Length: 205
Image 1: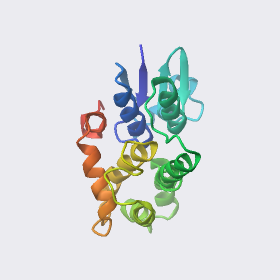
Image 2: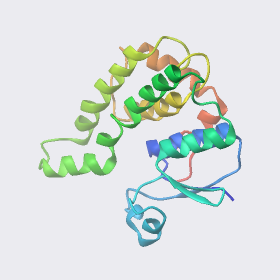
Image 3: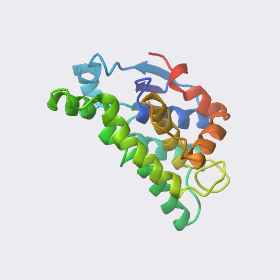
Image 4: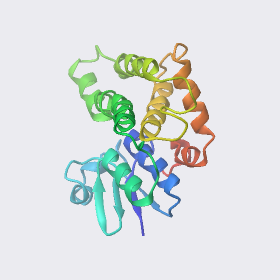
């Protein structure tokens, strides 16, 4: 039994759901309600002392950290998410990290909530999110080459990271009119079953 402990709107969980779909494996979703604080329960902290999602139980292992999980699935299920050349792998990882490492952490729910609370209401949640998502995705826009995928002519790790961030951008009202390449990649990937099935609107809550 493969079990994914996740939250429907978690960008990190979203990446892993896409990878599981690409792997074509059967898995069970176990929702962890981040809004209600379930990630800090003793039961979940026993799974992941960081109090984060996702956690994937697979192959007798309990894995944490979405990028590590996705690379594990890539290596054990032959997903082909990383190019064969060192230069290609470096570019794909850079694109992936531009969203998963540079945008996502500062827009994490607990970070954003802390900023809003500490500001005494001066900072609004929407303003915080837009302030970091918009320039981050604008930079990714300049790095893309113009095809239907982030790199070359096939799905890569970078695509699995971009789609959840675009979902967040739309959720928080980020103006993406000036990002035609990002929007084109997102639209193309939305037609792929593994990406469509992993969408938050189709995820147990």
